[in-house]
Length: 251
Image (cartoon, rainbow, N blue to C red):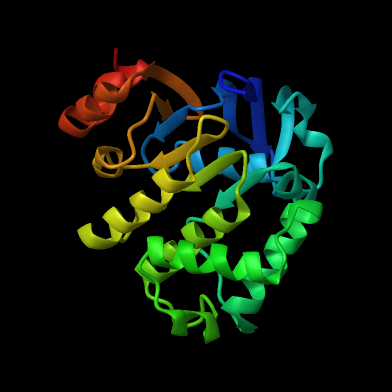
């Protein structure tokens, strides 16, 4: 399955309330690849993540998105999750009254369907994932994201990633607000979820997470367009020089 095309985006244009945000994106992610998407606030990075997951506020005005050879735009959000697409939210929402353990068990059943593990196997997978992320078992009795610190919310997102076993992970600023210890733990979880049969798109402002999760491709987005694509060294250049040297309006 290595080198299989997981995601293919062609000439994607996206608007919200008649304001164009994405202006002609082309992107291909193959099995075994980790792509990093960098850019300033407001450049359109999170818009791309939301569009991939089917957020109803965004209108695709042109272009195509194929996921594993199928038209992604024809799928409901739950169908995208069931097909193997995972989105880690930039700002995870609290769900008071819903215990973490119950949420994880039911979400794994819903997403993995016929491939969902039985009770004993699920407990084994859950214990292994929690150990990977250094999550205390008392965590399971808390309510989803209710009173969680920033680091706990991001650990919980990656815990869901490890249990969902998606084909493509879209991680929207998973590193934001993390101290160095939490960043290393979250990065360890991301690396643990990666295989030769999966792909990953990491959306970030900063190069620091890419010290721990090595990208095969780095894309720079400015004003809804990719202005430069390269290898891991491109992220280092951006960290050193900022984005202005890449802005087509100033070059």
